[in-house]
Amino acid sequence: MKILVVDDEAAIAEAVAYNLRKEGHEPIVAADAEQALSLFAQEQPGLVILDVMLPSASGFDVCRRMRRSSSIPIIMLTARADETDRVVGLELGADDYVTKPFSMRELMARVKTILRRSTEGRGVPAEGPVQAGPILVEPDKHEVFVDGTPVSLTRKEFDLLHFLVANPGRAFSRSVLLDRVWGADAYVGERTVDVHIRWLREKIEEDPSRPKYILTVRGVGYKLLAG
Image 1 (cartoon, rainbow, N blue to C red):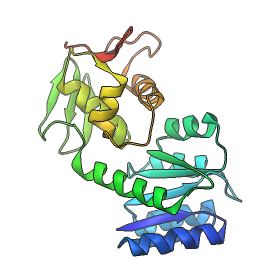
Image 2 (image 1 turned 90 degrees about the vertical axis):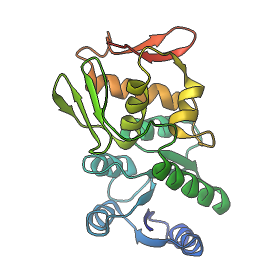
Image 3 (image 1 turned 180 degrees about the vertical axis):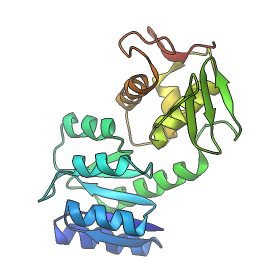
């Protein structure tokens, strides 16, 4: 699989590319934001490994622009150990993050896990349209409609909403949602669920501060109203 590696530190980019080749992938390397976006459009990789700190523009900006046209998995690399970069990356649609310095074995494990999840559809129901109230999800077309109006979602937002719509009225804890949508071996925490729920509400609710579709169940987690 083609994997785009974006990092201005040549030694890191070359090491990641070398290990990706050993795993049978075809790495494509970019050193700045402009080159990354150009290769992204030309090569259509199946996954992106994206450094936050780039010379011409931040990895966050690159992630935001990639998400406008694609839902492929993105792993972000950050030199900061605090939660700020991680939360921002998740809010922009990144699927995972790795803190520098990292072990190459860990990064390759995360690549393998994310690629497996993206093809298995972790916990998401079988193909076929599902509907709860005004929300219609059509998995085969990767489309969502609310009261007949199309809504654009990232891949993980789509998977989360698909799961909730297929199980209307049932309350799920954050840990269960992580297991069923992200996978039991995901390298993300429960905060990830909160971020994606908030983002979904901003896209499908008339008033995200007063949601009427995706509700918070105090002491449990979240549920989608049956109708």
